[in-house]
Length: 555
Ligand code: SF4
Ligand code: SF4
Image (tube, rainbow, N blue to C red):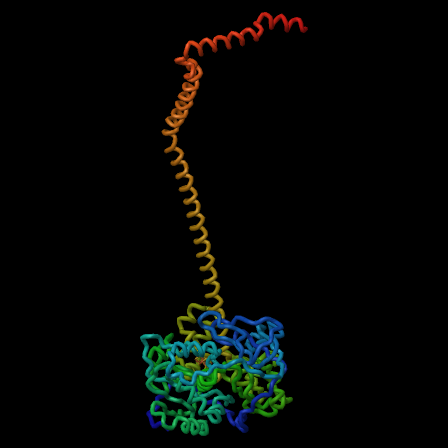
């Protein structure tokens, strides 16, 4: 284990952990279900776009949704079967609303599509590796759901000094990373090697809280001989698993507001993500399943299960002995950052790390919210160094400009402030509400801006067309005018040609008949013969008077 000096981070709390509720037995692989519901939107960014149609047969691992836009990843079939529907179904979301999903009916064969492994990844360009991770549908499996390929791309000019692998898992009840590290350490370390290669990072720190001794031992064994990797055991404190707090705890570097760990040469990935990267690169398998902690006093047999993405929550709870009579609330995630589910008919998604079936004792009713007494406990607990009571005040007053001045968007919604608040004020609800309002306002602004741009563009186009039309008409007119001076000479030329032709015809008509050339130079005998012929012709022809008399007599 590392002996490196540890730093700390501001604020934080020590809630009861309840980790042992679900670590009593090994990871249990869920049997094949009959039906899977796959929401198209399972990551931060754009949802996937369906590339299959209803009635189509698909194979396990086949891409059924393609990444739409840059911040997006592909979606894959969790088993072989038929696409039963594409439409709105309940999804796990605090709103309880439905969203677009692909519904699959399993055929029982669980037949894989062709998988292309790349065991010699070290000879492959990092950008190609990133694309494979994107096509494999991998997102941060710690719960955030940010497309992992983006965090494998530091940019051409950024040098990554430290890759931090996050195995902290600081939220109460959740143990999926703990169990994964205990049981599949070799897969995780193989994935870490690939991520390190993609980032060209100098060193790797694998952070694990000291309440997970078995996980620490397994990972240490798996990295034996890896000079660039070390396991760092951190004292347990919530929310140490949050990116900025973890960077500060391990390196002492504070990430400024609106900056990322990348800006100080650090990238943080979750250990579950590393295992998924290993499967994508070394086995050619896309992300079709994940480890989920099913826990709390409200489920009969709490444990960690490996469930396919899209498995209906009701099926998972049934597999774990079903909910008990004491179940009061079903939460996705942990008690600090999770949200209550409206229905167990929704499916698990890529970001589902925990299903907490909580009893009334585990999530006690905190009673009505009382007025803020300005005790300052929330400020002391806030790991983001915010002023939660001020944020609450401005959220209540719907002063969205002021609340942004107090850095609302640095709030990681960890819930530490609400946890310590003696007035039981559900502070995080106010912050989420304010964020939603600001996003809605931004969207409206963007829409209005888009509409304004469209209007301006249309006006510009109309004016341009009008100007072009006017220019065309002017050109035509100018051409006509420029033709007019030459029109008279053209007509005159025509007239002159006609007159000349008429003149020629007249001359021809008036010209004396030409004596045939063969009557010239006749001999006297020939002349005599012609005279005689003419004499006979005249005699044989009646004269005009005789002709007239003859014609009158006929009448
Ligand atoms: S902890 Fe609660 S009561 Fe105290 S200042 Fe913060 S919001 Fe007010
Ligand atoms: S929820 Fe936000 S305001 Fe409250 S402690 Fe966490 S970071 Fe601070």
